[in-house]
Image 1: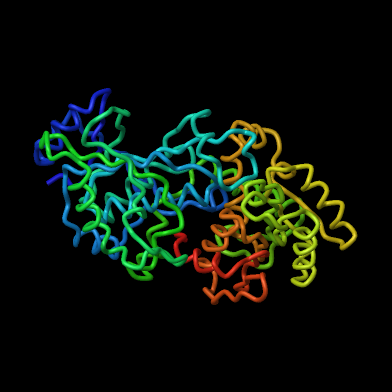
Image 2: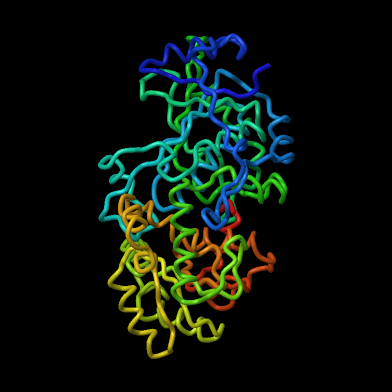
Length: 439
């Protein structure tokens, strides 16, 4: 039996309706696209790509998938993934988890592009999504790694390569959380009820005919509502790895680390999850009008003076003389550099370290793709500082936590720390919501 395949859907849905009406073995071979596997060539040297890792081969994921009742007439799309990397990454992972929970097929996710004037904001308003349009998940991620991981860890999940936006009486949009009531900040209390609630929703809102047409559900963006540890800690610590950043981003991040090592004469073992000793990483985000709109009063650590003062003080306390800054606002990075001089702390960033062909490669990326380079560099820093109102900062923290000693984070006043990372301006509700962020 063929356990893994992609169905390539053309301009009409009739073709996919036909294919899904039969057993998988009866899908014509010419309709099947077999994704190339990354596993044959092995991993690239860490000195070239320090962020490469093999496809996920998870027994915990297979156990969850094997207990699922699969339904080939149910198809999910996942095209409403917008915002910063924290939003996009978790939205896609939630789509996969909801598709597995319901036993449906999944169309490869798309990513909504953001306007240049959205730079520096984690959120991204929905009304702006109609401008730049959408791109495939290769815009940020390694598609082959994604499909290889699901082929090995959830072989019964049918992936569909593409589906056109075609109207059908058996096609509707849905935000899964809308099927639940009284959702606490820590996420759904009973996520195992999702397939039962979905079935009831389908019976109420979807016509029962024509029976040979699949039920297509366009999943809306889901962020901090699915409790990631509901399937067990091992599942939670593995599942996020089905997403790996695209190869050019990984190599640029590795080059950035190598150049930092050369320029500042710091021996670095880039293959280590957390490099000690090395540098402090900082996420500088001081321009967020959405945050100001939500909170009429001033938000602690949301502005340049308080944020940068906290970062410099953290570097001084940790006795780290170098800060790598992630920000889309170069003038503010330079301003921080002047401020840090008085404390004998050097400031650097990717645009400062990459030269010639590497800088050319960086400039060919859109601004939100460039942020992925920063994200990867920050993961390996000796220490990290970010802000509690940023999903980017939280995503860095959650991933670093997995690579470190997993010490429990502590919130004192409005500062959260786990010994590897520190977030400023944190509310207790932010900590509770982090339980719904895939590491």
